[in-house]
Image (cartoon, rainbow over all chains, first blue to last red):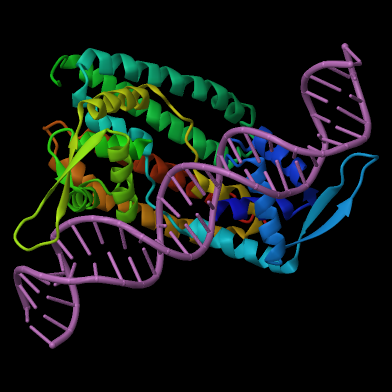
Length: 175
Length: 175
DNA sequence: GGGCGCATGTAATGAGTTACATGATTGA
DNA sequence: TCAATCATGTAACTCATTACATGCGCCC
């Protein structure tokens, strides 16, 4: 549902074709939604069948034909509906990646620590990528989504670092 | 993959049947993984075909037959493998629920604020449910997964409250 | 002339959910 | 006696991914 919201939202201002849409998503909003090309094309086609977007084909030079999607009034209404629902609802999140933490006692303490340190390093690499993006918008209104994203990364990082610190104090306690 | 890890991990200590497994998950680990019964049964069957668990049927009284799953040595090895992979890897998370934040300018500022306040209330209800669980384990080692979960909820709450505060300062700026 | 970018898709597969089926037991 | 609990599943469906197909244009 949030993918539908995303596509409709992006089409709200200008009509575009799928390829351009995906290009924009991949370069600017990859952290928000990871949707593959076939998924996007199929989704756009579904939106068209539902009457939320209309299509006109155009051709630039002798390049392949473009299917340019425009938001219809019905689509705009649907977008508003989805947006309101999205903003007000809070679906308790799941963190399936945290599953391993539940079974930490199945590994020798020192090995677990090593692995989690690698994880920490990976989080840091991710933060190194996104913190600058927030910083460079500083003063201007940072895009809330980006800000929100980095806040979560930082929460994860802080928690893990703290956890590793605590574990060090009582080495070998688990097994 | 993390669901596989979860099931194998739970079977590591005692053999159990699907129903009991699901009962445990639903009552104690619902915040970690939300998997439906048919999914679980299918997953257990897949694990059996892969040789990671073995099955023996038993019957208590005249109740329906139980399929009791045991971890095999191969399954235990697989579990260790999945656990290591899970702990060391960090897949950049996605927050599709945050998509709406990207389109906040499509709503009148005061309406957006109202909606986000409802969202905040929902987060608070969720926190009210989970914070006590952490507290009651205090002093003992809190299960890291639970702790980790609450940390994220709190990060979300703090961010949203802060954001609403900032928005209040510049009312009507967006439209 | 060889590979990348543009632009659209199809087909096969997988993962997961919903709704339904079955049939006995236990408690109000 | 009626509903809930125990215990297992099947069938149909949705959603998304991967791998592949097509064909022209542009640049080195």
